[in-house]
Every structure is written in structure tokens, then in C-alpha cells.
Image (tube, rainbow, N blue to C red; front, side, top):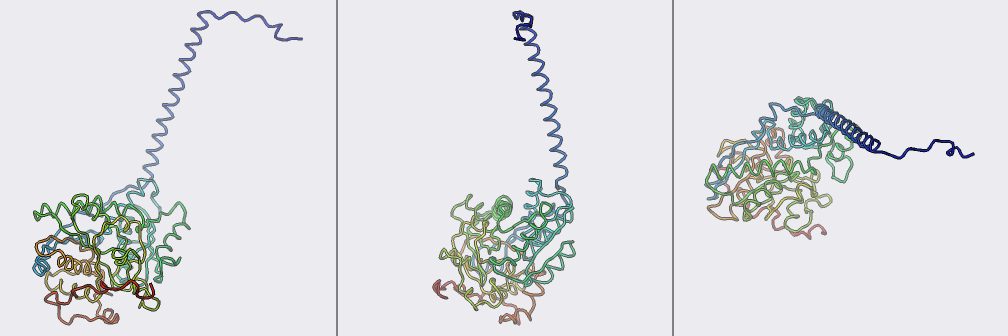
Length: 420
């Protein structure tokens, strides 16, 4: 039997039926819109709540970072007949320019909601970046784990522990070795999972941005406003390469003719990268290295690989600087200016003299005083350590720059030495 035949016929739709359909459709649309609005508001509220759980607490320490003074080193200006200016980055609260990088890395991680109260910040560092991170973490409610090599000044590890960081000391190793301090730090972060963030200062572009957007423009304006001149040259050593890359890019965008000089310590391969296009140093020959790949008293600078940050640098020329020249320059500056600097600053200043000699009288040469001697008492400013490295401890401070070689050590090195 056909059941449909038993049903009464459907009436033909009239105007009232059409009106009913229209009203129903409008009501349904309004209901849907209301539901979507409520959902959107709740989602927005959820995001705000989630954002509040992400770390973002500023501190007095963070407020002190940046706007460091720019000074003229009159003794070097007189000796070179150029104006030698230096930005005193060791007056940041953590004692180095690494404060800028540490703050930027943490802020970007917070913005991405990778950090929340109780998270662990992990970094591999020679010490300075770690000190800045430890201080910022303590004020922001994060844990901090620092992995560093055992050939750094002991006072750095002591400071890290005072600031509440957990410190893991490892033997120096090549970056290809899983026990390299950066690789160990990355591995520790992977072990802890989502509760930890590896800062990765060598590769993260937060490092570059801290100097491209901060240090570089800040320093340029200080030169122009304070000395009525435009910089002719920027001189800098490189560890991560962030300062060199950020400042060089910022300055060359303002004035393409600005010359950028890299200064490189013994054992580092960046000099040859600039001069010959190959990351190799003859000091890295087998059995040619006294300690390890960075065969120098200098701390925090010199590497045997290209980092993402260094890759963004715009460099015109490079100089080698010996440990002996760095030691002598540090003693000279203490005598002539009363300024107590560390190893990387001393190397920068040797580079300033070389750059001034290349440019000739009347130019403005700028660098960074990136570390104080107070962080280097147990190594760079320790007579026993200096003499143990087969260097001479100045019995009396140098009164001129005669201790500088006319051509930097290794500036005439043949890349083919050592079978390469």
C-alpha cells in the first residue's frame, strides 16, 4: 500500500507562508549572529586571560638597560689624529651590552607566549649573556639554567649563582661536539620540554634586532648630537656577531660610506672569512692550538663557525689582534684614561688604532667598551695566567702605542698554510 496516498494533500503556499519563512530565516540569522558574537567575546577574553598568564613583568633591572654614554678616548685620539669614540656598554646593569640581547630575547619569547611564571630559561654562554638572563629571570619569576665552558673567569660563575641561576660547567669543545656548551644547553631544553625555552643567542634574530633597532641608532645619534660629526668607521669584535651585524646594518642604511672593521682574536676564523671567504684559521691546525678552538685570553669573542647573526653583518675590512697587544692596550688605557677594561674591549681598541691608520687623520672612529676589567680579574688581569700563556706582563704601563704591530699578527697569513 502506498502510504503517501493516505496523507491529505498539502495546501498551496500562500503569502502568509512566505512571510513566516522570511521571519524564521531572519530570526535564525539573528540567533546565529548572537551566538558568534558571544563566542568571539569569550575567545577574546580567553586570549586576554592566557596573555596574563604569559610572563611579561618588567623590572627595575630592565629599566636600566640602554642609553649608555658615549665618550671620547682622548689618549687614542691624540695618538691617531682621529676622533676615537666609545660607547660604554659595560655601564648596563649587568656589566655588558648583553643586557640588551637578553632583554630582547625574553621579551620576544614572552610576546610569543613561550614563557610563563615558573618557566626555565636556558642558554649556553661564556658568561655575560647568562648574567643578564639570570638577573632578568629572577625579577620576572623564571628559573634560569646556564651552561658555560670551564675556561672563563671564575667570577662569572660566582655571579650567576648569586643571581639564582643553576650553572652547569662543561669542558671546551668544538661546535660539532654534542658537549659544546651551546649544544648541551639545547639538549637540556629539549629534556624539559614545553617548560623550558632555549634562548639560542648565536642564531636568534632577536640578538640582531636588539642592536639594529637599539644600539646602532642610539649610538649614531649620540655621535651626531654630541660631537657634531657623522661616524666614519665602526670597529668591533664578534662572538655571536649580533652587535657587529646590527650596528653595521643600521649605520650603512644611514650612510653607505661608513667603513666597518672586524677585529678578531687568535684562534678565531672570522678574519679569514672576511679576507678570503673561508672560515679557517691556521691556528686551528692539529696540535697547533694550546687550549681549544678559541686559542686566546679573550673571552666572549672569536668563533670557528658562521652564525646567523654574523651572516647579517656588512664588513669592509678585518684585522687580527694578538693577546699581547690586547694586554698592553688594557694597561695603556688604565694608565692614560683611568678606565679598567676587559679583554674584548682591549681588542676593540687595538682595532680602532688600526682603522685610524687606514683612514688617516681627521676621521671619527667609533667602538664599544663592552666589558669591564672587573669581570676578568682571575684571567686577563691575572699576572700568573698571562705569563702562563707565554705573554709578557707590563712591568710599567705603556705610555704610547709603540707596542702595536704596524700590521696585525696574521694579517699576512697565507691561507694555504697547514695544508689548506
